[in-house]
Length: 315
Image (cartoon, rainbow, N blue to C red; front, side):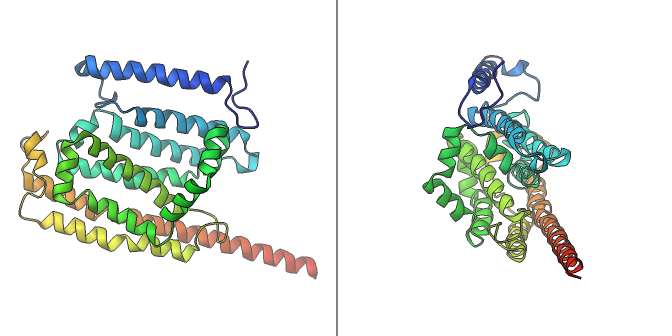
């Protein structure tokens, strides 16, 4: 029997078999979505995306394969695994199930979609701390690509404590600019660029803020991470309030395409969507701050305990 993964990270038979299975399953699902869309259950893709399908297949594969390679003390436990998988399932659910149809035809459901793929889903993934497991599970060519100087510099730039909050709020605001939002909802390519920019930015942002390590192992100190989380709260509140209290229809694409809930007015739809942008999205930063504060407390207690043990040994 072929091993699940080679120690050197090279591509083995299990990798090829898994990739072949993903391609075969994806091809079947893609065909079903194009030929028999009305017969598919709600959990099947509404608009099939190879990137979403392959991403949610390969990333957990690399995660669990890498977890087996790590030392026992470094392996994610039950709650970290559950958090990681919950984030993956949540992102897949809003991008590849029947929910996508409703997110394209109701503004407030679109806001819930963005909450899931830019805030809550990436937040849960970051809480699972999957980085070490995924890096250990990557095939050697992909691992080398990620370690390449250009890719590493790009990640460093995106996760810079000044750049990260600007990108995080900037992308959220960009796709809420009425003409941009209208174009994204009617142009398939722009629609998927919007979706994946939100997912990738969310993973990188929350990965920076929720890094459990103290500095210098982490990119920034605990205090800076708290400031980064705080810095995106006020602008999100402002944007959410503007949308909530606007008296005109800012997003006519939903009327143009037809609302899924015909009995809900444009004003009500828009107001609920604004509240989602205003309160739940903002509260994610507050939760992140509590997580960082708790980790800072645990780190200080650990440091104090180590100091006390050293003093006791010297007596």
